[in-house]
Amino acid sequence: MEDLLTALLESAPPMEVHWKQRELGALTFDEVRHLARSVVPGPVAGEHGPAKPATVTFEVSGRHAEEFIAMIEQNS
Image (tube, rainbow, N blue to C red; front, top):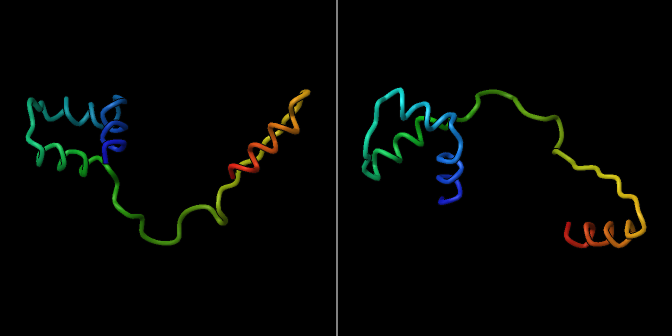
């Protein structure tokens, strides 16, 4: 929860924009929760999203490439 709140408060859009548009001062916990929920979009209707799960590819070079690849594969 704290990570989400930090992310919402760290960048100007959209939280700061909504805050300034509504001319908000000090808020109660419930008001902060309502503001955060009003900024987060709801579920998308229909079939949307990637056709398959996202993947990550990388290329490693240099004298420590094999060690680096082994560390990445071990932690995946």
